[in-house]
Image (cartoon, rainbow, N blue to C red; front, top):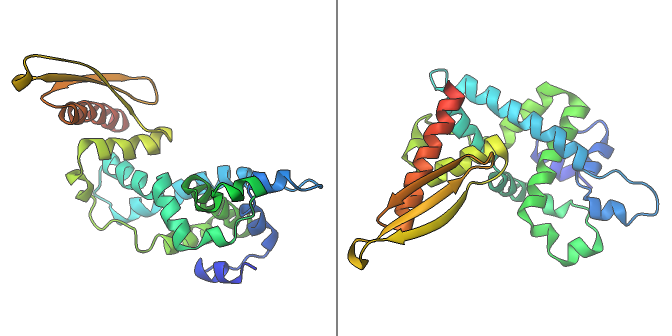
Length: 230
C-alpha cells in the first residue's frame, strides 16, 4: 500500500506499521472496535524531528547568517501551509485513513490534517531508522525548497515576516484589531492594535489600516528579533 510513498521519500520502512499509524487520523481510530493507535503522538515527535533537521541544515548552508535570519528561514520551511503543500506534493491524501465523518467533510483536503500527517510520517521515520535517516528524508523532500539566500526574505513585508516568525515561535498567528480613527476625511489616521500569541501588545497609527498594521508588525518583528538575538 505504501510502496510508492516510500519510494518518493527515499526510505523503506523496516516496520511498515509505523507508517500506517502515521497515516491514521484519530477519527478513523475512534471508529474501530479494537484499540488502534492514531498519529497524534507521532506528529508530536515528528514536529521536533523536523525542526531539528531543518535547523541543522540551515546552520550548515548559511554559516554567516544571523540567528534571526535562520529563524525566519526555518519558520517559512516548517509553517503549516508549507508542510501542507509538501504533503500534497507527496500525495499523502491518498494514504490517509479517515473516519466517515471526517471523510464526508473534506478532511482529505484539509491543510491542517495534511501537515500533521507529514510530521507524523517524519516521526515514524525517526523511530524506524534513527536521526540520520530522518535527516536524509527531510533533506530529500525539501530539496526544491531550501532557500538560496539568507537575506532574501528581508524583502518581504513586515506582516508576512512576522506571521512566519510567530508560526515558528508560537505555532500561532498575531491578531490585528482596528481601535479607531481620527481626523478629517482627507487626513484620517487609523490606530491598530497588534497582539502576539504571548499577549504582548503593540499599537501603531497610520494613514490607512493596512499601513498601520504594517507599522505595528514592524515594531513586533523588531522586538521578537531582538529577543532571539539578545
